[in-house]
Image 1 (cartoon, rainbow, N blue to C red):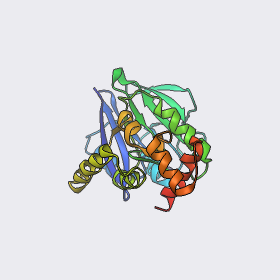
Image 2: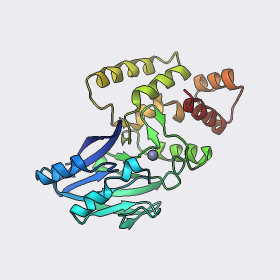
Image 3: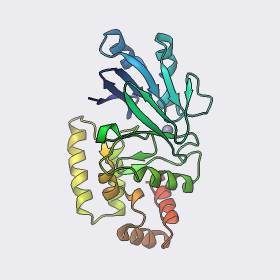
Length: 254
Ligand SMILES: [Zn+2]
């Protein structure tokens, strides 16, 4: 059995702690304090680390953890200190009994990776700052086209995939989604249930691919409601990539 738990970091980052009977790994340790505490208290037997991209809030805890213990660190080729297993598109590896496959998803950064596991029919995806619940990451290093294609790529994974994102941005994302798609009843209901969770300090994640395909405007650039809104606001029609680009730029200033 596999267990995934969030560790809060910075303002709104999640470090994901994954545990099986063979030990634990963490994904994107932007900080080390809480992980080291759990190691010192023998609550976890840390075996490795996965890194989705180079941003400090996903990597800053690496050196402290490696000073404490030799660990297997999987991540992109980008001279990130501490990565001892550089991985790329289609690579497969196993750690703590979980078989992962590596997906390259440039856009937010050029080195961005996602880690997917079929996990005996309970698929999981760690996608850093690319797909968020109700939204997507900002385009910092790549092109809008790359981001668009990366999102399409991960959206092709099974609908029941549990999606673990790097930040708690869900409520703000849904607020924007409602601005774009204001008559969507499911979106309104989702906003209310997430608002309730957040008010109780409960993480809104993981989400599922099924839910994102249904609600996330960035995965629905073909949807008539989204198309109409973008046409109304920016005079852009038809081309899905242009609609995505307009949507992402609009969100940047929202
Ligand atoms: Zn980032």
